[in-house]
Image 1 (cartoon, rainbow over the protein chains, first blue to last red):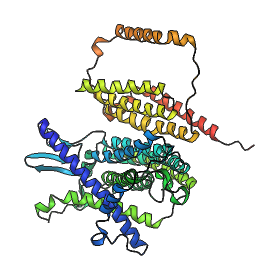
Image 2 (tube, rainbow over the protein chains, first blue to last red):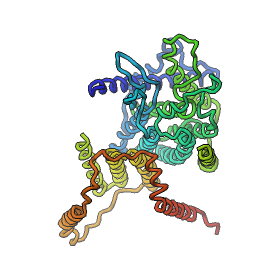
Image 3 (tube, chains in turn orange, red):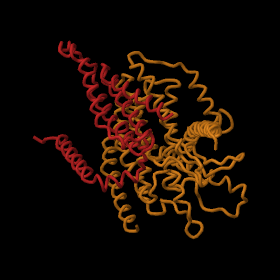
Image 4 (tube, each protein chain N blue to C red):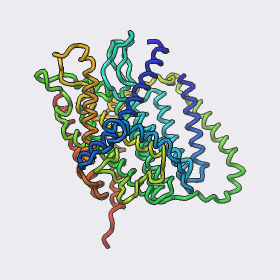
Amino acid sequence: MSALTFLIVAIIKIAVTLGVLLTVVAYTVWLERKVVGRMQNRWGPSRVGPFGLLQPLADGIKFLLKEDLVPPYVEKNIYLLAPGLALIMALTSIAMVPIGPIVHLFGISTPMQITGVVDASGHASDINVGILIVLGITSLGVYGIALAGWSSNSKYSLLGSLRASAQMVSYEVSLGLSLVGVLLMSSTLSLTGIVHAQLGTWFGFIPQWYIFKGQIVAFFVYLMAAFAETNRIPFDMPEAETELVAGYHTEYSSMKFAMFFMAEYANMVTVACIASIMFLGGWSGPPMSFLPAAIQAFLPLVWFSLKIFCFLFLYIWIRGTLPRFRYDQLMAFGWKFLFPLALANVIVTAFIVAIRA
Amino acid sequence: MHLFLFLFFGAVCAGAAVNLLIQRKTINSALSLIVVMGSLALLYLLLGAEFVAVVQVIIYAGAIMVLFIFVIMLLNAGDEEQSKGSNVAKIFGIPSLFAGGIIGIWVLLQHRPEEKLLPIGALYGPADKVGMMLFTKYLLAFEATSVLVLIAIMGAVVLARRSDS
């Protein structure tokens, strides 16, 4: 592949991924409002377009046209920097995620992943520390929230961002450790490599995903830590509206608020992507050899979207079900329950891997 | 391309380090330190040590500096107060800085190991090689560091425990 084709392919991939991600983010908000509405026995958005489907568009226009207030006495540079930082970090990590296998279009073959290339032997390959880069970018996302709260010069914002930084740093430990079991079994840090390690099946139909290979405890630890990382109910301390008005984004309005909002939902999508890659085989699925070849080509995308959808639905479902934790309970849960559990899982997995080797 | 990126991020790193020193606001200094950490990570990446680069981002930028910012926010640390400074530092400060720098570079050039110089990007440091070296060649240093960290954790626990009296 020449440098020019590489550049064009990369730009197309970035544009498509960004477009799809932002659409998914917008419609996750719609889905959330709709599902939570039905759970609370009301309709949710139903006025703009059929089933309220144009509601995200209307929301976007509203965000753009609203007055953009900058309160006096804010730390202006940092105040303006924070929402951008949060959104950039949330959108960047999707670049490492392999969405599907290699595609062949117009004589060019390339994997469905922004940072992926086809190597000399025709296999897909990507950055060999991919999962660490995702974790690194996610851990930088906390700056957006911390700086937003601090620079707003408001008690509620400051309390919200203090809670957020403490919570995210604490749960990051469990989140990282829960992935170590999978990394020990796959012995690679590349996300493509991890998906490829889960491609086989037992008895021809049960896929060899890591959740079925004994990483089920790690999966639930990851799930709980991921809820805390994305500040979702029942761990939405940083924006607990009954205590803190709106937490770290109290003083933000218009598009700057929308950027925080988009960052939160983009983070949800990324976390769901990582969960499905690490534990549920990414774009792999049970073989469907009875289907025609043309449909089979689309199956990986279908599997991946289905897994992401299930995770997003779970997020919304839990939001509609559970109350919020108290803050000391949240910290105790993270450090005294999740962390030892993740550690025990690492030790047991390491023993089993060492014995088998 | 590599050389250009190396010079660029080296300049960013040095500039942020100077900014760290001259900023009066604590939070701006902390943010400059994050920029220093980030550009150092990129320099590691340019040298080919990708694992070290990512670990640098996760540990320093993602964890340690978050705690710095956390403490600054918690204490609401204000602007730095500046003393008048001593006359000795004013007269001898900048010349001795230059002299020290020149002597340092001269000593480094004298002891340059000719055959061990690596061109940019020639190093290859994937995670498994780094791990192998940590647990074989540098085992003693690794274990000593872990004991050091353990002592620090115990110290923190002792300090944080409330006395009942």
